Length: 186
Image (cartoon, rainbow, N blue to C red; front, side, top):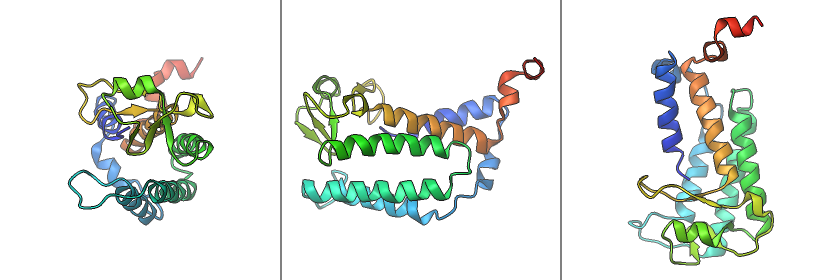
């Protein structure tokens, strides 16, 4: 699932709720290089169609899980940022599904079909009728009108929710604004 859409939505919501885009520049991520290494590993493992290489499935899975390791370390280092623990929970949910199913993220065959995928394996998802930890696998499909629509899991939803919280917090949107002042005195 692409995080671009939840993040863009969070930016718009943050503006509506009085947040400021300039506040995002004040967000200080520690060990930001970990994110770049993780993204690079994922691009190497699952290259875009225009890149000149293809990766063996076993090596791709190893690189993918290694990238999750970098992301989980980055989340631990940045755990005090509001929303990061939510993202970490979603990543752990995805890793659990991947590890339990031999290094690939299972996708329900119906979600794969709804996404218009004809291959049994698409990038990092493999159609499986009876995966382990079935409630954690890719089971939903984004609407086809969304660019780059794909299948997604509950872990992806939790990651997106955490990303939204991070953006809103970083923009300066606070819960008292969402609840209303009088609700806090009750």
